[in-house]
Length: 313
Image (cartoon, rainbow, N blue to C red; front, side, top):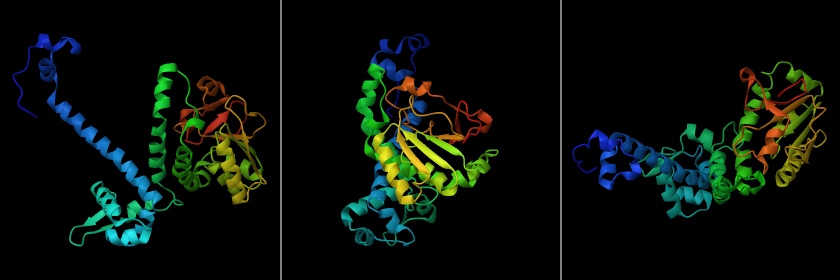
């Protein structure tokens, strides 16, 4: 930054910012704080750009092709994935600069470290980060609607999101459910697993694509599960997934808004009220539903309960 004149006197610094001249405003800036903020901006901008690069890596199978393959040249990766070498080279360089890939200057080859492969190359594993980036990028497509909602106070419905939001949401959250829901989250709740094994009736509120519902149905065949979501497309997806998983005999998915689903007669309730974007077009109706979080000492991403049932998930 260019040299600055001597600092202005305290009286001028106390004037409202809007009344300062451009030169006075410049003098009022703390240069160290400005530089720190600009550094944050550069990091945020880089992260935004890399989000697109990660989604491309997922969509084109680039990470999967690199996993366990050792160092690859751009031409070799392009051949493995049926993509153009010129674009692949740019993608590899950007990913290496961001720390997602390793680069060997001597050979000009790139590799995917085991740790990155664990999180980026296996959609069926316990962690799959590309889903989060797809969810984030697709969510940005709703910015015009959200801006209008700021002006009107109206809600922005889950159904109004880009379809890739729903897919990214499942892609990111489902691995966590597969790795933790049955293995640790449910067993951590007093008496819940025993009731599920005995044949509890469970409501999954805001079930989306039904990933967690189906996981529970496969683990507890004596229990019955009903998933509710007001989004028709998600329910259609969930019904198809349940059929493919062979659990349609004990899982049912129904379209129902937050203020109208059948909320009585369940032994347990499971929900995702804390997930990003899980809001309907009527925010006040959402708040009126009889679903409330557990006390802080027992709270968990999957622990939400109805007002009356004795068992919680």
